[in-house]
Length: 279
Image (cartoon, rainbow, N blue to C red; front, side):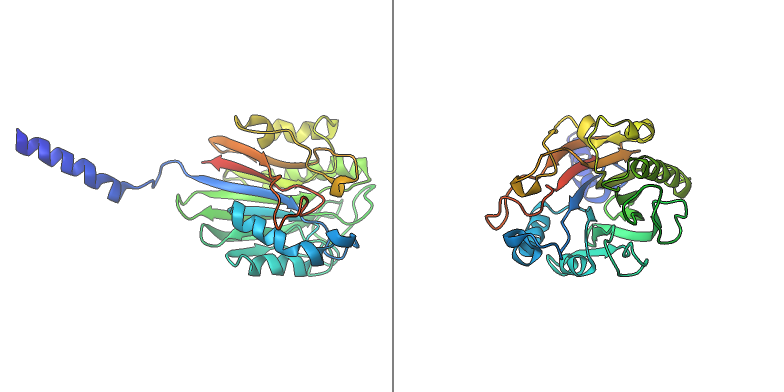
């Protein structure tokens, strides 16, 4: 009897070494962050004074994937070099290459594998750089099919920045994203949508998106409803940045990242937001 009990205990002790979490639940942390144009003349808040703070924030928060808005190529390149473990995809919205804002997606190469990616424009001609509807300028969205290395689970990540003036452009741009999400994801993999939507949560333009996906801010049991636009402390403050999800078993937490870095109260004119998701 003692031999049988000993053998059973030994088997239970060894089992975790071989079983691990394979096939079980796994978590990823995702983030949306409008970093403010690197060429904007913001005085002591200009990129030349605050760029290390953004790198320190990423190194501290360690998101597995982050969608950047208002990111110019030199800003993306810096954040890939520091803290040093991020790779990224995205193109400039002006020419589909390097000119203008990138809807960049950075992913932690230690935890995430890139499978494929692409960009489309929020317009009537989404496959070429173009201005849509009543938008003030070209707007785009970048998507990526990614794989969590720990669990082997695949998921899509989409990042965008809706127009700040045109209401029709915001409504139809968001609907285009919803339609594209459906077309690029026939397998029904979990989906994350991040972005600066330039509108507050009660707007009717969210109706189509809310029917398909959930706002991480609203469904997480641990969450906040802090304004995401801070305007360097000089403008009206609103929630205009979002993380939407679909297909995950749960959203464990949502947070507006208010922590200062390099003793700077504001590391951008938007606060980063992050969510912890479970497959």
